[in-house]
Length: 377
Image 1 (cartoon, rainbow, N blue to C red):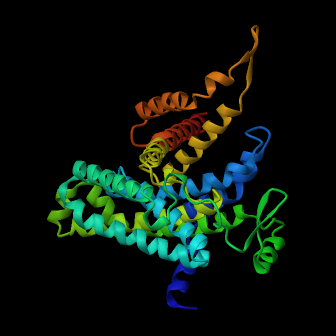
Image 2: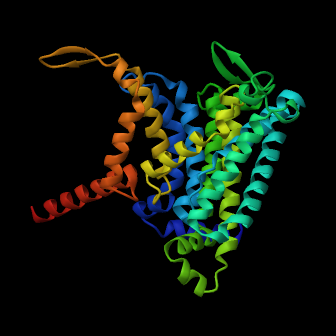
Image 3: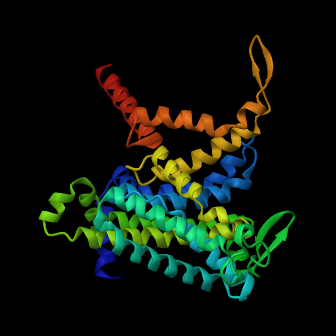
């Protein structure tokens, strides 16, 4: 056993159960999200429809990658869909037109998105936060126009790419997408799980989220927080703030492209809206609603976004005591209004913490009150 491993074991042995939990709470939380989100959503008490669980996991990854830039570095990107879209279109083009393996195209998409992010960062981060936001919007619109123009007949223009985009190792069985790989099926079989696409996304989600967590807890991530909190002080301490911001955008773009590759398979192809400004706006709203001051905040925001939408759209009638059944389907089809109302309430109550910080603070307050009551009693 290496000295580093020995040191970690000795460190863990010296901790009590609560300290071990605090040390590993983020990995445990990531694992619980991947394991529980589908059965929870599929419960009849909630939605009774587990089919959106895969989409939610992918958007949780995208929102967390986006927050590496906004929450930890303090840079607002209005064009982050270009990195998600790069992952979507690169994998779709590779599979549909060049018969390339999905894994190879995913790596190429990540490299291309990281390169684009790095070059944009080198050009933009030095001009301040407002100009950075506007310039990322401009670059995002440029790429959206470029993809819509169908260069070389590769992107499909406004129609996107819809055929030939399913990897050969995915088949359909009773309406479910199944991973047709023996070792994957055997591995999940030991756990009593079906080898469907959700579990493939869940594994990638866990690995990618652990990677993001390692970044934010590393010296690099702590330096980003220092830059976010006081840029002038960080600069006075000799930190090259521009270099750190460029690499924060690069990492964020790379993880966003990974989410895009997963989304392409999930959506059966590439759509122009993946590059659109609404996609950039949605991930921004998800991150802020969930809480950009916390690692899990954007993931909570992405989950809440889809849960609220699916729940409201699934309601046809509401029974009010003393009044009877009311038809609300037509009203709730405007679910964005109700989500916007909830967004305003949450942000006014907890501007940086979002819904995650709001619930966390109230829970800690209640626990502290309970401890005082038990001590005094």
